Image (cartoon, rainbow, N blue to C red; front, top):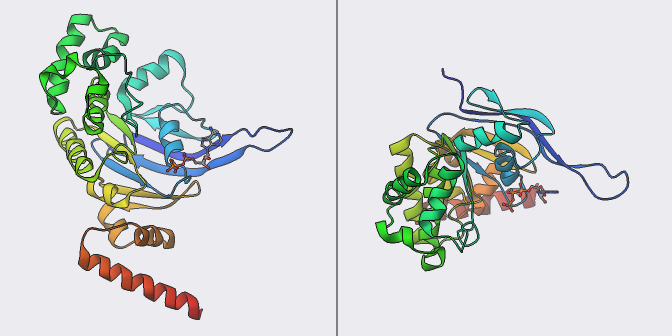
Length: 279
Ligand SMILES: Nc1ncnc2c1ncn2[C@@H]1O[C@H](COP(=O)(O)OP(=O)(O)OP(=O)(O)O)[C@@H](O)[C@H]1O
């Protein structure tokens, strides 16, 4: 079998704490996970479980205190300067908030061509690529001349996706990319992520607190709790037949559209509560 595109091994991330001789706080406690080329791995867990920190460590924005991160066979745990910039072409990011992640003073065409120019492409070549990027995310060709404020949240997120695609990355870290959008817009943007993966073979590390979203998109799911991996496996298997108690509780708490399944869940919850009260 081919080596994974991304391999996170025994990753520990610690942050210093202000105050004399205070020990650092350990927010990731030995994370193991991998993402294969063209695959989507969903990272779920409640607020504060460490999802974003894993994404930031992969992007070189959070410290790798112990363990390692390997990308495409290269150890990227402690890269800086030119070596990190080189890897940053292949690992892009889409953030949660489409209202703050785009420079409000730049036109969409400038936003999309900027990363290409920074990487040394000529202005004309970069501009020529903009039309193709807009088409790929289903925005009209004239969107390039407009400013971010002229677009809805969903359209801005399409621009953010196009910007990530500009570098033809192998992996995109998606940090809650649809959670600021209303439900129908969420569905359309999720479909866009799927379509882009089919067309380009890009892999996603898809961070979300919403299991329904993650299940829709992911091949495999990794469940986090307090900086540790509780369970990782096939998306259908983890969400339908969880092995871990915490995953089961997380599933119980996440809304599901199917009314039959909802009723079943309610009965399961009641049964669990009854067992707990008699224990
Ligand atoms: N720079 C930092 N310094 C100290 N602690 C931090 C720092 N960044 C994150 N943390 C802590 O690390 C833990 C994990 O945070 P993280 O943002 O990775 O969780 P998360 O699962 O993404 O949560 P959310 O869903 O709320 O975004 C939290 O307890 C957070 O307070």
